[in-house]
Length: 216
Length: 216
Image (tube, rainbow over all chains, first blue to last red; front, side):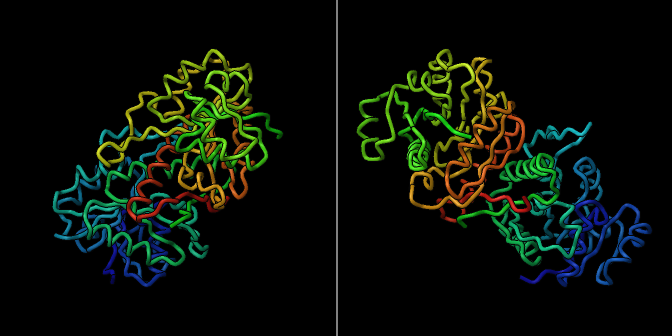
């Protein structure tokens, strides 16, 4: 599947910056969406000439694939901001995880919909397509763009075009396998997998814990 | 760590039978606890002379390590039955997952405590120690005792002796690595991992999906 320009909202952040750089390195046209495009341009200048910068609304309006790489606690504001500007048939890729680390203690944010993905689904216009991906891969590892990923990444969606787009995006990164786990409601379990990776990192003083499915 | 006799309650069931056979094969003394010891003896006769059979209460009373391998919907009854007979310092290993498959649809049972493990903790006598293990490894694979496991299994507990016992039990099985993920409350995420394995099996028509942690 050929991928057009990919907009990454929050593309200079923790998860977004590694993703933006790796996707650009893989040959995709990447647009970083930012609340502060001037500052974002300074950051991105060091990355790659294939990465453009824009405000979040314009980045969302101009792309067929929009990655939501903002922290979960700012997701409502950004979805409300961009919702009306998403193109017909565009796919939103949710990479957020509803975890907090207040006082150094990891905890899930109470999300009435059951997962960050379902929360976002409930706020997006019905015409926008949504898939999950890149929720479990450590930001730290993504950002160290020359390190091989060597793991699996989990994808779920309720629509086939969204699922295919997310799997194609995962497949664009070398040594990363996309694993389709079914409908969007599976995001609850994917988000718990992220919590498990964080717990393993903390317990074993690592930074890069991630998963591979055996038997598939 | 040397392991004394291990009692497996529900030891002729779906998850228990594979575990009992593999632990016996690894050289441990295994007692299968059953509601119907006469029938269980017939089943176990084909396995190994190292496996004894007993009623659940006696099996619990006689062991330092008690594996709860009954379906989650019978766990309350069995914990109430054996609770008072557990030895001081004995470790209970919970392998249950609160999933139902009514109408072919996988769903979590609503567990107010947050996980099967925390539910069991709330019903066990305070003196009994509790750890989780063997929640994610497919019963199908466990039961095919000559197939290599080649994966990781996740352990959590609130007490060090319980954690060590569970890790030792996992380490007793060849080509299986135990991964300590911290306190008992992490069981929520481990149980979601099982749901993810089931979802992957269903989606991809497999039976043996399981996990390995990369970067550890």
